[in-house]
Image 1 (cartoon, one colour):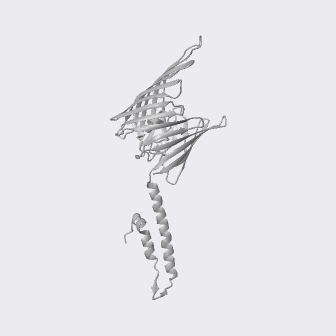
Image 2: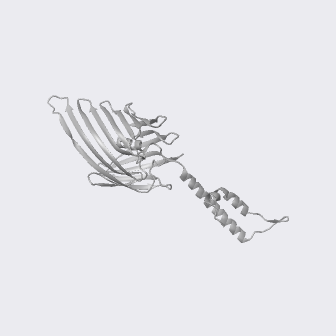
Image 3: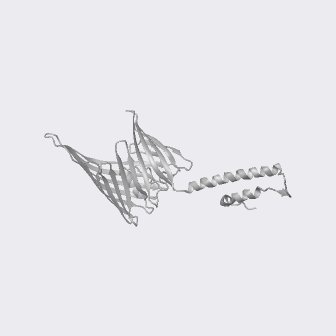
Length: 324
């Protein structure tokens, strides 16, 4: 006899059970069931419960588990101090991020993403509680993304960023070139310029290597007479490599373009490894040091706690998900 499929069992288990549980009557008298019949009923009923439970687990596993919030804890061992911040995420009907709210004990900000109808232009606006913020526009033309960003996080600092991001055939970023101009106004201030190139290498949907180089010029001045002007310039470079596990990352069901998640992460807006297919196990930095990431997973294979140590700081990230 051919074994029925699991879906067929899931759909018909109630009928199967009811057909087996039969009360046999003879005339007006109830015929006693044998112990064998009771044993059969008990086995079938237990099997039904197990199959139904299994069906429920599979249905939950098929749902779009979306990252709802992240709590980041930084423990500074030397000063025995803990700093915490929280990220809350909102999504549109296509499971793309539309807002990320960042909250700390002293400040909050709201980072909104607006997509045009074709999805090739994205506007990002990150507003702080003091009504200043960052405004960026990412425009796609073929495999190139044009980047224009203006940042005004406080009354004295202004930042302009212009760049271009190149994508591969899978829509993953492979090269970024960007120019940054920072100006800090005040009784003392600075002017900072840099030109950066970042080359990215991917394997099985995971970023396995980044190679970067930056030219920079930094001028620091003081308005007080007699104070010297400090000029710093040079070129720095480095390579980072990554190794991954085989589990799903927090943004596994998020449909925000991976190039956009990587860009936001690169510019300092922590996007929780959302552009990779799996989770980072180790990161080897340009100085040869290695960071090891440790994970606790839920029943559906998503990380719920991540910990790692970098220098004298211990980081812990706690993840909460929502089902759609």
